[in-house]
Length: 453
Ligand SMILES: Cc1cc2nc3c(=O)[nH]c(=O)nc-3n(C[C@H](O)[C@H](O)[C@H](O)COP(=O)(O)OP(=O)(O)OC[C@H]3O[C@@H](n4cnc5c(N)ncnc54)[C@H](O)[C@@H]3O)c2cc1C
Image (tube, rainbow, N blue to C red; front, side, top):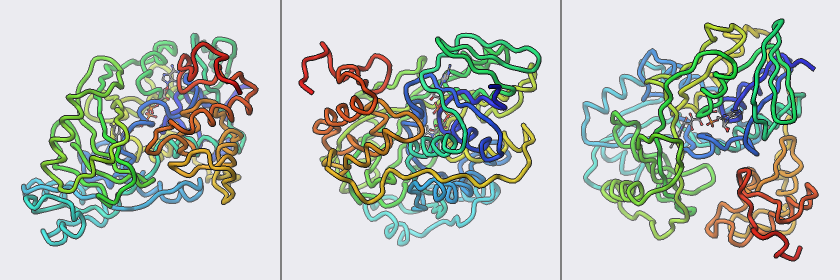
């Protein structure tokens, strides 16, 4: 079969484009080199749907952020995933800078934006330090699970005829008579048009396609995760600096609190967490808030922002008009993804027909949890089995964790991981020792056979 489109890279940008192409009634294959979707920047970020006041007016970031913010609510409803407009506030004492951000937001087309008084600020953020006087409040900002957003978009696409290929390592591309042929280790895919949205792997894919490469830079952001708490009920930012939006305190859609991210330029894609990073977060958070529930810290993690200059790159290749290049999608890429997809599919590929109605995806949560497997998050066997049987293959421990949150709680999988491994092994006919945590060599059990199934 020759697909109309191939999308390379299964982060939020790739899954959004894949889903949009399927909505236009075209055939599409989504290619991902890892064992699950959403293992790059999309798995490790703040999970915020930004309002859109931060990006420079006239930039692609500003345009796609504001449009993406508009699109997310309906999409989340259709996909049956949680999304809440909890709002965001930028806090500080420099009223001129806050006013400038307000003006920029208005110019970008952000609705429901206002400078709040000290009293209103205290109501919004009771745990804010008394030293901080002013805030810029954006009512339209919201929270979503970034990985679940991407996975649900892909699941809906597959349910409606799309194809997802995981663990596909492209080692060759050929292009002749208007058809691309992409060779993996033991598989081959043919298509008419290609979207390169491979994030940190963008240049690798571009080289194989013989199209443009860009100077890609990496900036790491570290976080501290706090167990469920009402420490803050909306996202609280400092005033932005040249390094980005700064360290924030935000609830997640699932009720945890995230403190972070830091912003450290690094040479390689490296997601380690460091003492230095954690110290920076603690020092800022302690100077800005009171009653910080640090005794409920359950994890640290980091994510990597991938950038090319100051703005997103979303355009057709000058070398091959059948290739679209998407590079440097750092923040607000999660928010922007639905708008990037709309632009790529409708404007760049000229698929202007109305979206067709898709068969909805099934939620894993249908009110009959069965035997509880993850006690911290109260996730039942039936929910895990539904995730394992969903249209996009799910066969690693972290793939289960991203879908149903088994292992996301305060014991971080200490209690349920082995039960999850057993369910994966049973579903896929694997030996228990062959179950992987996340990547190809991340076996959960060493010296196979030591555990009695
Ligand atoms: C610390 C941090 C905080 C952030 N906070 C926010 C936020 O709150 N709100 C917001 O809007 N944005 C936020 N962002 C930005 C957002 O996370 C990213 O813009 C977005 O996730 C980028 O998605 P993507 O699909 O472009 O890239 P990725 O998610 O990295 O996806 C690229 C995919 O391509 C795959 N790939 C790579 N090479 C190949 C290959 N050769 N073949 C096949 N597949 C390949 C990768 O495995 C990966 O799955 C944040 C980012 C970071 C790092």
